[in-house]
Length: 174
Image: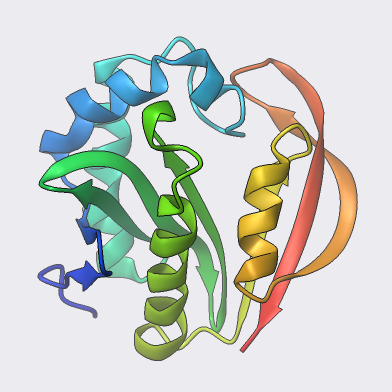
């Protein structure tokens, strides 16, 4: 089992395992429709209760080795999350989301790169998949810069939108 004392650091960011105390900030970030509409499984409208319920599972997932979820901090303030979940053997799926004022500044790429290093070097994953709402090409650009290759276009159910949306799938082989 990997220690929850781990910290991932980049030139600008500190990433630590999420905790229940992050729920108010998570709810605040996901209360922005521009953020949440791009997420596949987020509840809408975002509530602190839903975020507490989600965060309460993170320690169990970590202990089981099925997901590693990190709060992404800039100068001590949580600006988003980055995680690897659906871990099965040596494969998993990464995801990330950030508060809108921090978009377009390279934070997603920086956090995702640190997460990829963790996934391969520490968690021992060899195949990592990722996807994004087709309306969010910036996320696809991040994945391409990290060495992911495009796999397919598909449709996935968007919980916040309540409909199937076009979705792009990528993969990375370590």
